[in-house]
Length: 182
Image (cartoon, rainbow, N blue to C red; front, side, top):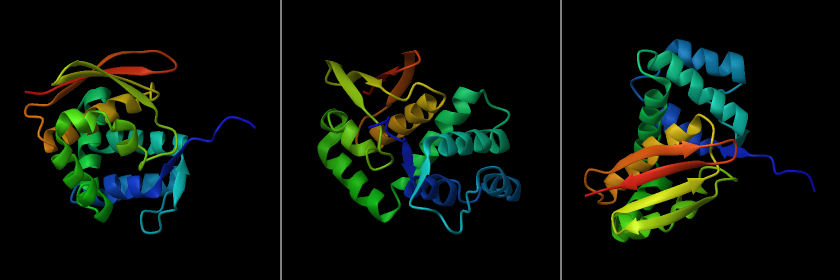
């Protein structure tokens, strides 16, 4: 068997581009997604190749947040993705579950939480304290900052007051995030 094809589910495109960016979507962004990637927001597919998702996020950062550093634009898009996801039917259940679990127990389920977005995410959480973890994850490219923003937002929602998430390092295979809250 060859290497697994990394895919991102269509519901992630919905959570970001239709729900999370509602009111911010531009004709130019929608046109570029269609023309450059074949992504029709009115007829989303079940899944897309990882490269399509990565480029779609890059286009959104270019179109909407060109005044920000790329890392900050991606983190903001991660926050908007999670905010959008949390108001979809699946996301309502996920956010309620996270609130019940609280940030410490939610951190232990990070793989499960993100597995609803794609077929490849793997991580390992290392506990430093009840409110401080490192996460090693297999998203080393520019999307690491999107995951950073998504986790920071998500852990704020589940009770992690003043949640902070930073990229501590990365190489060709993985990224390391540092997550803490009050």
